[in-house]
Length: 319
Image (cartoon, rainbow, N blue to C red; front, side, top):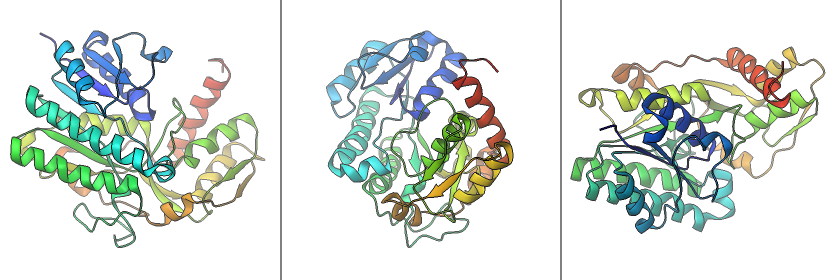
């Protein structure tokens, strides 16, 4: 019998693309996409779709039972900037949702769980450069707090109940497919849309703001690689990963090399304080040593790929 996989948050930035990759790998009928919307977006209509509120355990129980789910990719979350506007909702979705997933997994003997953590677990007391795998976690946002608590909860369920929970501390994710969903690194996606449309861009962080980033194909590659890794080789449940680090100005300059005349101005808002609390670069040597992680994209390669993909997308598929 084919393995049944549930993806929560399947309509989000990572979920929408990960669902397609999983369906290609395991068969569309075996990957159940779950989101809070009533109707799936067109890209997800090729396989099963369910409406699910992860805060309601009975809904989760029903989906897992009905579809005989064996693996869960739990991506449903409220991100950093949105979470600061409604911290109570961020706690409910991020923490109650994860607790429900872990409890249902324990009761139904789920084989594997993937859960994304974030560089938001770090904070002002964390080393800024080459942030180590094992370091001080001192977040200043509700999103970061839920990710630290989530990491500890995942560790607990692994230690106490033997659940095979695995996760990655993702940096900012850059994608050409889905618009960003309320994160502090959203500027690194929005800036490309402006450039391709021939519009000026107003960036909400300072030009010298350096943050770790990752291009979506590397994000998907890291997720699948970790889930397929030999459990005996894993020293941690949640791993640092990164693709590249650059400043907002460096990103703008790379785009301007390819889009002459593209104008960017900088007007920092409340997200600047969040960005300032995060690392500038990440040490992901543990992931490289334990399961062979290595990104495919650096800044120039990512910029080329993003501009090419968005030009195609915004011209209706015509080059």
